[in-house]
Image 1 (cartoon, rainbow, N blue to C red):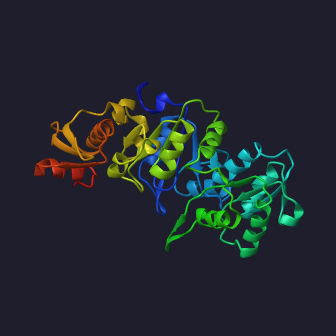
Image 2 (cartoon, rainbow, N blue to C red):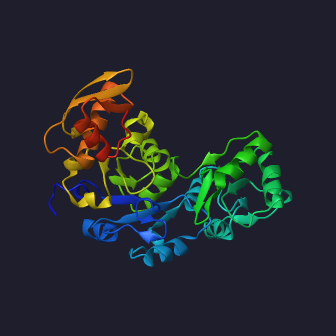
Image 3 (cartoon, rainbow, N blue to C red):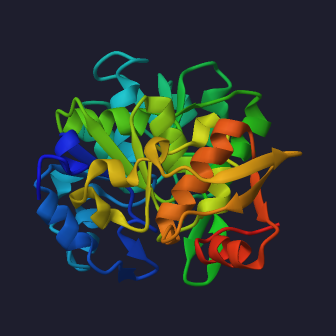
Length: 332
């Protein structure tokens, strides 16, 4: 590893889990080794507010990652950190969520109550599979008094082995409807959880790494942090090409191992030049340099598209279309 690596330009890695470190129930090959080789402090950042940091660390350890509880930042932890900006130390807090969320609030010195009749001074909301209508009703009554309301995250769905199930965002939407209020949000794409993660590592030059534009990358932009988008999860090159400025990554690579490669190799702004024209928001690629393939080609197309206002890509020549498709683009 040389001083020109991407890792060498940063003092910590703020890393997403699903789609970045793991795919389904399996670790993504080579990523654990790449994290170790980077030599940087790692903070494992997740929007999951229904699992304690120690449980998240244990889960990652079982998949080959050297994660410790003190290196985990959940959206529930971030919500508790943000609570200090809204209430005094030791304030009464109503937690609509998992018992681990209540434990975090207690550990931070707050008095956790279970009813709106206990006159809470703030409401914390996070996902729990054991939540009942009564839990939501108590939260609703408390929120309607005008006290601060902090949601751990607004993920609409929760991925499971059986498919997508209602996430915390779906329950937050129900509370918004019932209260005519908007919560402060801690988790991605809000900046709070990333700022808390950076503070956890005492980082001044963090790099955010993730696979989703609408959470990881948008969160990094909101936090004013550079971001590496990896192609091992949800979103691909066509999604990034069409992304608005609020969801544009600084770097693009196939997976996280690129942190140990030359930092300029993954930077979108310095990608290779290509020849093309933009018509009606579509980048028509006319010619590609010999040997420009895969993710390097994806970066070049995305750079050209962003610079010239194109959200889609196409080509006339069948060979060029084939190379674009091989690079992960939906062509046409």
